[in-house]
Length: 387
Image 1 (cartoon, rainbow, N blue to C red):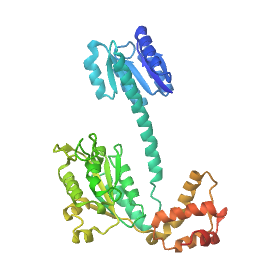
Image 2: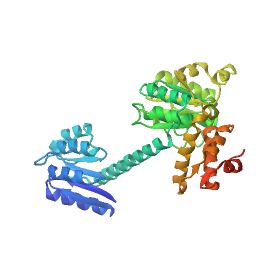
Image 3: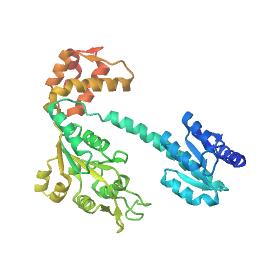
Image 4: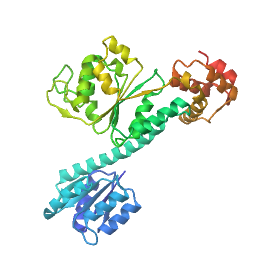
């Protein structure tokens, strides 16, 4: 149920607004405040999904209400209600963070559309916050080995800048963790982190995926579509497995880096983008360059900062910490009590040849939690973790 507050000193207008909004959707719970002071008190003591606020009111005007409300609960969309003489002020409130403004007397369709859009925005804000917390937890970088400590130190130095980063390392080592940490610790963290797996997209579709397309540009292009670069505007784009990108797409990525502009497939119109690029690959790009499969000029554009993620075999001292982390996480996901691992079991895991790296270790831990005893023993390791 969406909770809406109307702050308006004219009782007749409050009644009209309440009636229109309540009849539009039974799930809308509408409350009223007759002045700005009461409105601020109600905002402090309740969780509203939307506030509609008049501009000219006694005790506290709408502009002051807007400023105070944004400090108290910045995520609430606030729609200003303006009389004819208040239009300039209403426009100025947009700069102060108002979602929109509605003129008196309110147009029915305009009012209801604004209410729907504002409520949709609140849902998105809440969902984004939830996902951001979830992402932060899912992408923790576990380990205290020298190699991992050096990567963390590098991220702390590089993240606040806009320097492009190339992350290398075998499959399953957690290259995407580096990309997420770089984004979340950067000034772009309020923007989006858009991930593109270049190896998973057919070569004939990669350009459309990255740069978008216009209607009719190819079979199946039934409407204009924005690409990943536009979606990442103001944020970060993570080009995973960039070594698998086609040469034609590489040329367009190079242009985007050089000029901060892209063109949708089928269009000659330039679109400005402000995007930080983090790329990753499990390939040796210098070998790819020698064999003509990767552009050397693009490599030098991407590899301003190089971060090499070690294999799990090169950081075996982190295995006890990783096992404990995965055990806690998987136990919550499975809804089962957390199991412990004997010291002998951990020692055996540290002796394994982890060709699949962190990804393989997680799968093995999950298997042992499901099949092993309450305390996972060395015998469980031999039975259920064998290759």
